[in-house]
Image (cartoon, rainbow, N blue to C red; front, side, top):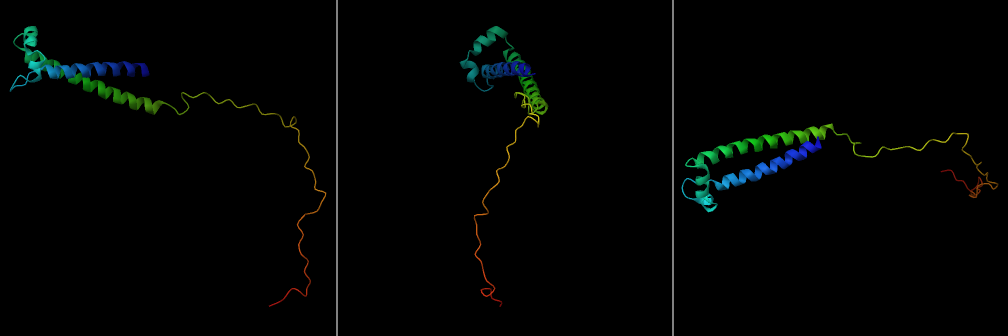
Length: 131
């Protein structure tokens, strides 16, 4: 799918450049404009007296192809983004085998030989006061 998206993107770039050149080659109705600068006489020699009609039709067809390709690539982008999973493109996670419980050695917890090192002060009943 991604190879088709790449091919259609390249075709879209070519159509875009062609469309820009077509628009620049056309003569404006009031003056020569960019069409005269880019050789308006050469286009009349190539296409005859109906140069404006030929360039207008070519511009219309190129614009339709441009919008169809753009909309198709937009839909393809949506399709690809919805149908890819989060794990796609990542290496699979391989867990280490668990060791059996009998093979695991357990060391006994050493018992403390001393009593608690914290000693509480001894109080006598006379020191305790009742309010």
